[in-house]
Every structure is written in structure tokens, then in C-alpha cells.
Image (cartoon, rainbow, N blue to C red; front, side, top):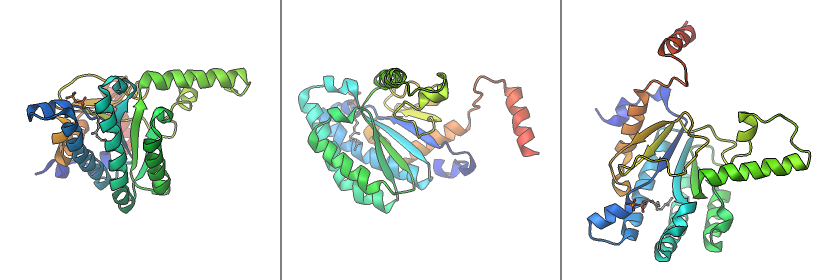
Length: 253
Ligand code: FPP
């Protein structure tokens, strides 16, 4: 039985977030430059997006470039940016064919004009698609997002536009993910056990799944395996198992 067949379609997570890691190590293992790993990582991106679309998930968020990634050698940053431009250009027809809507979170204003042009073109072209929401985190970090939200709140308060008392719901309205459910599952590849400043607010109750597979080797079955693992977990949200059982039996009556 494949992992895909093992998935309970009635209990799918609506939002999966992915930290794509291990491109550099994968390339090094093969005696190649780091960018060779990033290029091969695009295949894993395609497989993951296809797998999410096949399951009709609502949201898939990929950590494509963090605010910390600017610190990499300039040649690698440039290569990553041009890979992004070419991937957006080449994959837009596939996004259209599969009814996938692309959006971005992060400080995209700091990306080059070339990147912004291609990104905006894909965002505009896919804007009316109603299937999977593919979210690229670009020049994103969780702390940047929280500080940005705090500044917007400060500005709205000063302008007298903040009518409600602060609460989790009000705060979440100021995040870049304001129209998205929090991820139910986070996948990180390459055997690292870190969040790396990704979706810090939104991951509060997310199930974490770590795999030693390096990103360029990640395929649909690896994605499905993570979902099967997720479905075997009990999500308690601070409650006891007994409380959850009582709730579930009351729902089944
Ligand atoms: C992490 O591997 C990967 C990235 C920082 C970038 C991910 C980018 C892609 C997969 C390419 C294109 C993306 C899209 C959305 C088309 P790493 O370099 O940190 O690997 P290492 O930890 O082994 O050094």
C-alpha cells in the first residue's frame, strides 16, 4: 500500500508549511556547487505542489527565501533569485492548468525589480484560481512579521483607527497570513530540528514533522508519508485525551 493510499481523505490538514532544507549538502555530497542543489530543489517543489493539489489541500506555504538568506555569498543569492524568476515563468502555465493560486508573504519590496515583475505577473495571472493556494515566503521571517504587525497596530492606534481591545484575533488580522488558517503540519527536511524564524505566531499548535531526506530528494510519497504520520497524532490543544474523546463521541451522536 502506498502512503497516498493510507491517507484518510476526511482528515486532511488544510494548511501545510514546508521548510525546504538541505540543497547545499545534497550538492556537496555529489561534489557540486550549492546552486546545483537549489536547481534540483525545483523538482522537489514541483512534486510537493502537485501532491498538495492532488489531495485538494487549501494552503501550501513554502519557505523559499528568509530574511537571513541575504547573508549568503552574493553569487548564491543571485542564483537563487534567477532560479525563482525562471521557475515562476516556466511553472505559471502548470499553475493555471491546475487551478492553483500563487501569493507571497514577506518583505517583497526588497526583492529586485526582475523578481517583483515575474512574481507579480504570476500572482495576477493566477489570482482568480480557486484550487490550492500556494504561498511563497520570500524575504520572510517570523520576527519581521510580528514587528511589522506591531508597527501597523501602533500606527492605527495613533490614528484612532484601532476600535477593539487587543486580542489574538485582532493581532492575527495584522499578520501577512491574515486570510489563511494556521498550518496544521510543518515539514522540515534535511534532519535539522529548528523553526528558523518561520511563521513564529502561526506555528503555536502546529504538528512538526522532521525528515532526514534532503530537499532535492523529496518526492510526493515523502509528502504523503508526512501526512500519514500527522494523521496518527492526537492534537489536544491543551486539553486531555478524555476531553477530546468526549467531544468526538458527542459529535458522532
Ligand atoms: C535550503 O537549502 C534551501 C533554500 C534556502 C532555498 C530553497 C529554494 C529552492 C528549492 C529553489 C527555488 C524555489 C522555488 C519556490 C521555485 P540550504 O541551501 O540551506 O541547504 P544546506 O542546509 O544543505 O546548506
